[in-house]
Each structure stands twice: as structure tokens, then as C-alpha cells.
Image (cartoon, rainbow, N blue to C red; front, side, top):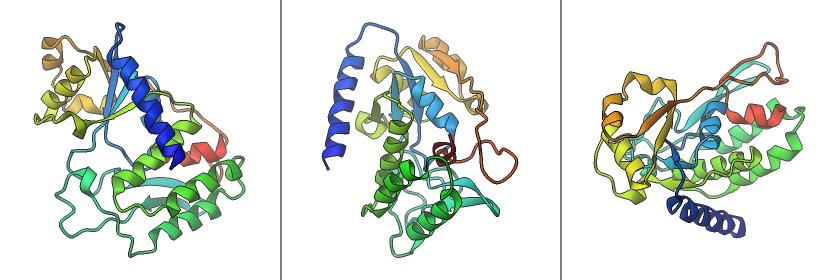
Length: 240
């Protein structure tokens, strides 16, 4: 409880300083994915403010509740089980974990078997295990605890803000712009994947610059054969 309070207090202080600054503000907006890949954290680190998009629809086959690791038997999914009934059309912040199943123990066992001989196993595993043992009922709380832990390990100090707290009702590109304008942002840092749907002309009209993420995936000493990019962040944390 003390660590959570400390993080919240520090985050609030950083937000206060940022929102009342006189310098250019770079904003990233993204859903709080489950133990995501390195590129997710690269964008977070390169921003002045990370807006957590928690009031969008849950994507059943997306990255909000699952990611991949490389095991001795190849690529395996870590999937956080959620309650299906009435959940799939809900906003992400309301998605409930299915704690009747034993998926948390399965995750911990697989992580321990996979990374037990890794360079940083003892530094990382105990903290992950503590988060898994917490009695989360909502996916958003589980994901955020994991994201905060990973950000700490990566020395990311960029504060976060929940989109649901801003009471923005617009959708699509307009929603992104309204969120950025709410915090008086100047630059929107986003991944190349958003080129498929982002309406760049609206950003130009609003005088908000789009900065496309340039990310070169690092090659590190990875276990079990040839190097595999774009795995869950924990593969990097255990092996870096």
C-alpha cells in the first residue's frame, strides 16, 4: 500500500509540473496492454506525458490481456483470463478477471520454468510473483501494476493520466486530439501502425505535430536459439 501511495503521489506531482509548464509537451496515448513489447515502453520513455486509454472497448484478440514469450518449446502465449459473459462489449476499465480459473499459477510456473536460469531471474521474478498474488478483480488494475513495475525497472519517469478522468466523448482521431488539447500538448508521439487510420489533416488544423516513433529493436542475449523480436517486455527484463 505504501509503494502504491508513493507512486500515486509522485505521479501527481509530476503531472502538476507538466500541466503548468511553458515548454513543448510531447504526449503518447495508448491502451494499458498486458506485459507489452519493448516498443510500448520506448514510446512511454520518449514522452513527457503518457495518457492511458482505459475507456475504450475491450479487444478480445488484442494485446490488452495477452502477450508472447519464447520458451524451450517455442513461442507461448501468456493470457490473462477474463470473464466472457457481458464483458466483450465493455470498456477496458470494466473488464473483470476470471479468478475462478488457475491461470495465474500457470503463468508463474511457465515464467519460472522459462527464465529460471536467466541472468536477472532473482531480481525480476519475486516482484512479478508478488503482483500475480495480489487479489485483483479488474484487468486494468492488474495491467497497471505490471506496467508500473516494468517502467520502474526501465527507469521510466514519465507520468501517466487516465483518459477516463478527462470525460472526453469524441471518437477516433478527434478523441486523440481532444485528449491532447486537454493537457495542452504540442506533439503526439505515435507508432507507425496508426498511419492506417490516423487523420493527419485534423492534426494539422489543430496545430498538433505528429511524431512517428522511430524504434530500433535491441538485440540482447536471449535464451533458446535464434533471436526473436517483439516478445513481452519480461523477456528483455530477465535477459538484459
